[in-house]
Image 1: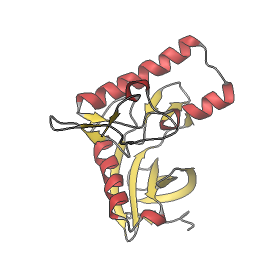
Image 2: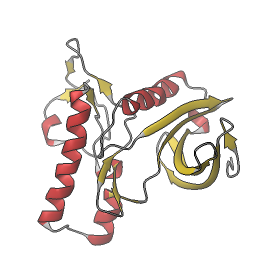
Image 3: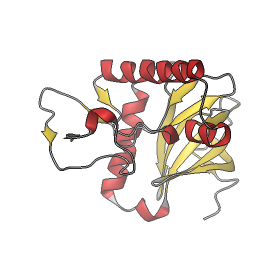
Length: 188
């Protein structure tokens, strides 16, 4: 479905598609109320009637919206129109860490440490707010043109409480990558 030119919430005019993920498509949009550009993540059509996917999409919005940190992509708004469920977020001019690594290859150690420190700072803020991302990978880190790393895509984040359990044999997140701390035990 071509959504270019569509206005969501009487406010966000979709101007171009800038990304596609497993659950959603991301568009650059003009916010007519605040006269700025934003990113709008729209749940894909095949999931628009699936209550489980809609729930995960809403969890992403709620999880990320509660966080304010220079190394986490800011969430501005959330909404739905008919079968279109969307999240409005900060538009980042840059590329994913995956794209940086593919384009440049192995990064100099000082730059890698700087990026890792920024990711850790963002995740630390999430953890302070009892939110575990559960899908950290180069695809979900955006590097701005100024070299700032920003964590994005809290789609499978989990609010942690005293009742959070650790389950063995359950997989959550990207199956092509497991972080070192998850090898041998998987968190649910």
